[in-house]
Image 1 (tube, helix red, strand yellow):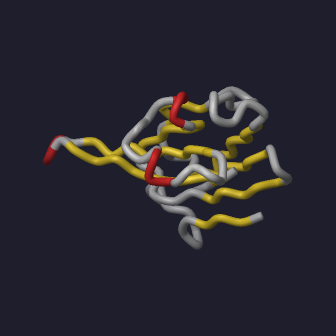
Image 2 (cartoon, rainbow, N blue to C red; image 1 turned 135 degrees about the horizontal axis):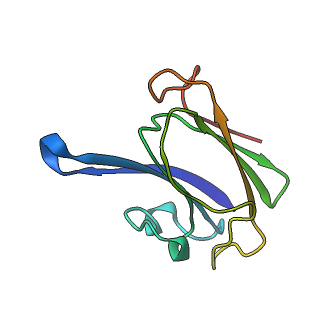
Amino acid sequence: MNAIFWEVMGGGAAGYANQYVSVIPSERPAVSVLNKGTVADGVVMTLSHAYHLVLTWQGDQLLIVQYPDSAPILYAGPGGAYTPLTPRLKVRHLGVPSHDGQLDGGSRCGT
């Protein structure tokens, strides 16, 4: 599986900026989920003003998402974040101290 952190912005001066974490099977291209903010398309978390995230895999089925504790969460799959694409996936969401939506060291992916 692959975890993808992406953003959608729009609306001009009074606009919006939402950030998404999607998880999809490895054989599916990442571009297939961009601009599709639904659980059916692999979205496991939606935030606003989260300029950095840390995504860490622990094993094959557990994704740890560290996000700025100041970022409003618009959607977070409860405990096990079921999506039709990844039915056995578990996601743990951890708010960490931040500075205006930015984490020390920026966004990172790891294992």
